[in-house]
Image 1 (tube, rainbow, N blue to C red):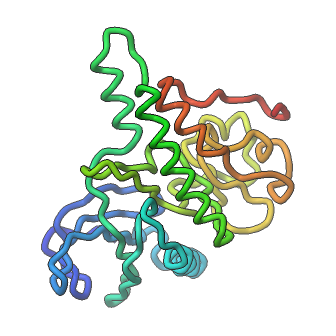
Image 2 (cartoon, rainbow, N blue to C red; image 1 turned 90 degrees about the vertical axis):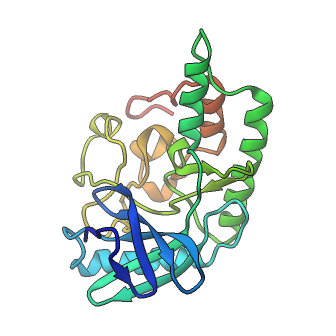
Length: 241
């Protein structure tokens, strides 16, 4: 559903929209009880009544609740108001890593990425976040610069663990998939044989092999490499790794 500024979800008052996608809508809101700003994620009307999508939304909340790490955006709760189900999450103020790379490119005569002494601490923080998630048996599946934000104090936060943002027909070819921002299944998006994630940031094997036989994502160095070189990950043809 689309929420307007001033609308209420329990104790949360909507302030403004932060982003709208095919699989979720995110808003800035005020927690009127604790007097803090939060991020509210809700399902769009097109899937809000889908039992499978609602079940996945619940699972996403449970996955995020299992993670407690300084470099992972926290979940505060799962709010139900009427027919609306919403994830209440930490609002991470600041630009994404993708924004930082784009800004660095605009500041130099020869477009380039971030300096190595800047990138290495970023990579360390990302790796620590993923290690904490992996210890809980959780794989991000969509790690990319746009899903990494930096707070004003320099702390980087990994966002959107296990979240799908767009839909791709089942059985789509890898050539077509590589041109798609995010690959998911149109059904539950968690079943066997389903490929999840942003193609350019995935390990190449899933596009040519059964998902259960290979990793679902590239290591965090992929995002760090793009930050340093300003070059997106190379897209590999089907069947090559």
